[in-house]
Amino acid sequence: MLPAISVVLTAFNQEKFINKAIDSILSQSFNNFELIIVDDGSTDDTKRKIDQYSDSRIKKVFKQNEGPSSASNVGIKLAKGTWIALMSGDDISLPDRLQVQYEFANSFNYKICFGLPIIIDDEDNIIPDEDFPVFFSDHPCSNRKVFKRLFEKGNYFCAPTAFFQKDIIEKKNPFLISSLQLQDFACWLSLSKKYDMPIINKRLIKYRRHANNISSKNNNGRMEFEMKMIYKNILNNMTWELLHEIFPNQFSVASMNDKRCFEIEKSFLLLKQSIKSVHEVGCEKIWNYINDDVMCSILSTKYNFNCLDFFMETGKFNTNERDESND
Image 1 (cartoon, rainbow, N blue to C red):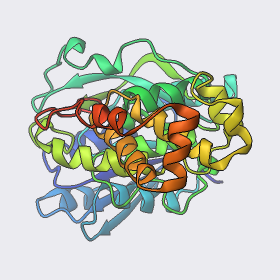
Image 2 (cartoon, helix red, strand yellow):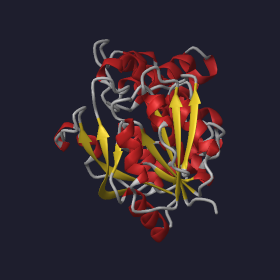
Image 3 (cartoon, rainbow, N blue to C red):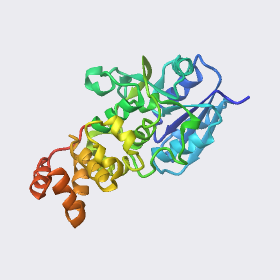
């Protein structure tokens, strides 16, 4: 019989925490699952500790180090369950996590859902919610509102609580292998174009934050770069109807049948964002339009936007500011 849930647990050099992570899944109140452990080329004692487990529900994969996206993608490809539950090798799932998410998603016919974390440090001490308010503020559920919230303010989902049907994953590699820090953000943005994405108002995991977290503030430069690359492409293949529904004040009727106007208005949408790297993507696009005679004329005649307006935009952010949207 195929499992109902495939738990994809990825690990890299987490010898101190891996046993707690694995044990937290094996002791779940919901029993119809498989546990796929993907070790991403650990160089410490993580592999040996994983190898000690002989539970028939466990599949073990040991691969060369290619980053968390690659590890997650490998695990998802191997999954036999209808549902996928993500898990990190330094986190701890609470005993009823799978039961709660399985019953919630099936009861309300959701394709994907998340939960709330208890945030802990290296020694399992609880960190106050106030230190990470992004996880605990009010969040939308409907797909259009979720996309708008993600687009305008950045990621707010706790990735190790993700629980989704495998068949909603349309890409061969749902997590960007070129991204080290924002691979989950890009995936949630893509899925929010089609699916409601609720957060269950219940603590489901102990989510570990420590000095070696990839998402540490020390990596802001890489984060800004990845943010820019994601936003350069995120509006591609989105129809005028969809974008007008999400951002009704941004897209005019005139741009519905005019591709050039539509592209300009998408650039203006990026230009309006407060996240520095996203605003810069909008500036890059407008830069190209201003240096194209036809597009420059459209900017001037239809949008009353000229070089002086553009200079105002490029001068909005000083070079010392950094994105804080996905810390």
